[in-house]
Length: 227
Image 1: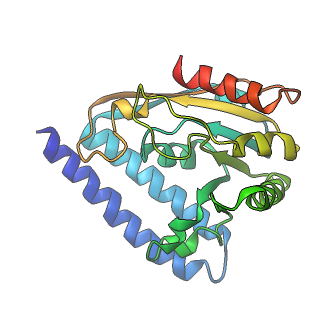
Image 2: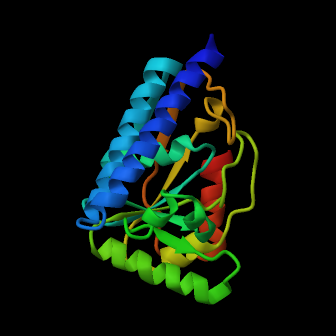
C-alpha cells in the first residue's frame, strides 16, 4: 500500500511542480515576486499531498526565534522535503544553491529571477565573496537566506564534513544566523521513491554568537546536526 501512496504523492508533486513552473515562467516576466509565491504554493500543495497520501506531518519548533525581516538559516539537509518545508515556514526564503541547478529545464532558469543565490563550489574565495554580497542584499530586502552547510542531502544518521560557506555568511552578513536541525531523512530518504509515514521534526535553534570563529561555528552546527 505504501508504494501506491508514494506514487500518488509523487504524481501530485511533479505535476503541480511542472504546471506552476510554466505559470511562473510566464508571470515572472511581469512580476518577479510572483515566482516565489508560485514556488510557495507548490510547496503547500505538495505538503498537503504528503500528509494525505503518505501520512507524513511536519512538526516545527522554534519558529518564535525567527526575527522579523532578514536572517540566515543554517539548515541540516537530509531530503528534498527540506526545500518544501522552508518554502512554507519562512515568509520570503532565499536559497543558496549550486549553480548547476540552473540547467534544469523550465525550473532552473527561474531560480535567479526569484532571488535565489547561485554559488560556484569550485570558485574559491571569489565565489564566496559573490555569495556573501548577494546574501547581504537579500537580507537587506527582508528575506531569509537558507543555506545547507552539508552541501547536499545526507542520509539520516550519517555525518558529513560541513562546507565553509556558512562561516563566510556568518562573518560577512549583518543578520542573525539560526541553525536548524531535522530528521526528514527518516521519512523521505535523499533519493527515495517510497515515503515512510510519521512526523518530521524541524527545530530552529537560537542564533549563534557573532564572536564565534569559523571552527567554533562549524563545531556548534555539527553538535546540533549529529549529536
